[in-house]
Image 1 (cartoon, rainbow, N blue to C red):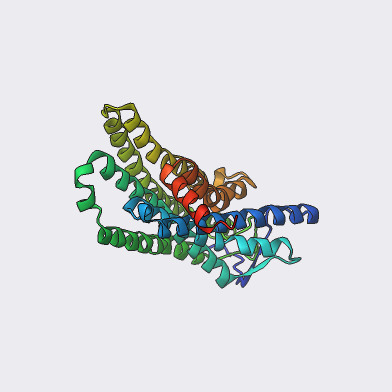
Image 2: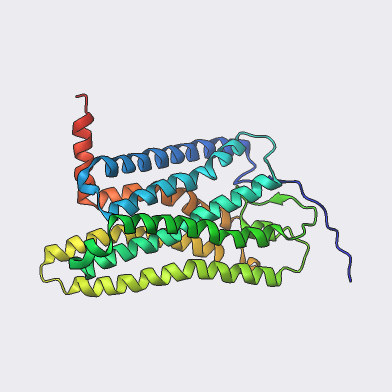
Length: 311
């Protein structure tokens, strides 16, 4: 058997988005502002849902879960990235790298399932309105939410276990700003064709199963909306679904571009740009999209502003 130069790796060096000190300062400011927008926007969105009785419905219950999930998702990676922007040596320990990968993957997979759950909620509300309150009760919402979070944290175990059981060849430089599966795979000195195939197939199942369900749900929803007699009713129905469809497109589009491709087809640098979309852009846009396209949320925001205005 050919010998392999297997070296124990205790830490990794994150190369980040840029090695230019001036560019790093600019990127620090940009991502700091983006992170503040994520925190403020999603926290305010949760407060609106909690304090306004008109928003105490299953749809907004799941939206509050999405907002909290976006806060956790961005917090699992952005603070570390901001620290690296102002650090000379961007080192992350082996255990911290595995932990960051597990948490970020778990939260990302939770969002995949949660977006499918939200599509199911809209399906029942529009296609079976008379049975909505009995099918989607409060306790059902709680059970679904708990199951969604558990599902994400269980499914990600396979990715992390397979990735960090590989032997590494001594090179500990990760061409990314966080620990991602493809980047760790590229450091292995083993024949990883089988492992890469398993990870790819698991990723396809995790992404495509909820995505297929979402597409099927919206096909049925659109067919039902087209049967609504009044144009105002159709507009309202499309409005409640439009925001969700935009979020699904951005999140799933970037996630599929990152994980549903073989490692050999990866172009250096593009994976980092793609990751920005599902780690930063989507959590930042979600509360904005749901606010601008939702009259109930805009009314709640107006009441909130009038209630706490000092003018």
